[in-house]
Image (cartoon, rainbow, N blue to C red; front, side, top):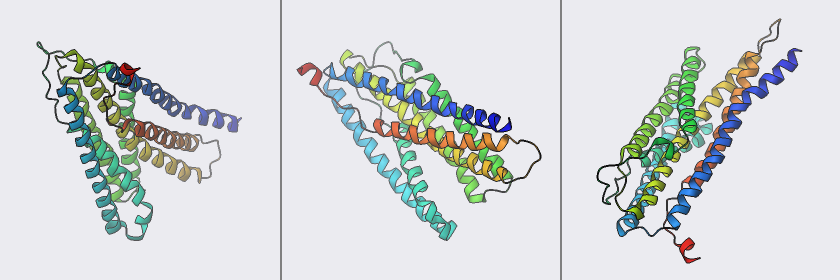
Length: 279
């Protein structure tokens, strides 16, 4: 009976990760709609220039994120010596994802004429609120797991500070990018409205996905390691906590990899195409 309960618990804990991956699969449809809307319009010269400037800015800052990842690799070698052989890939991924969020948080404002009186979109028009609050919940969970593991002495100080600071700092940058996308007034020219909506949609999904990955992967690793450590104990009764932690760890890692896969599809900048008009 105890084994059956453990199996049911394991499956139940995996469900949130599956639901999160499903929600991101549905979000791909929002991206397709935003992209198709641009194809059925002819943006103004200001709109085309804005898209080019935004794409250049994104590429430059993401290269800065790559450089940040290389610096993090060098820092890990200096701090952890031989143990850093296992850290170069996570350090590089962290640098790239931070570059993605930083690029969206520092995007230049479009130079087209704004609507008068100023009109602003709703948050639900840019991204599913479920994805947004799931990101925030995962960041809180990752920070809590890092603090608990750190206090138990299972993390070195350098690792503990990194596991705590990276998700929180990235989340703050993501909130800045989301706030900028929400408060920016809509353009006055109707031809630029689809371009503006696509830019907001791209920003909201990029920062939410990148922050979710940076929180899910550490959270999954900490839960998995904690569950394995607890599983080594010998108890007289059935202990379901290690099972729940291991299942949560697998769910976090799987969800993080799934969201990273969707993130790659959003990295392509918004482009102007008149294929729909030509057909």
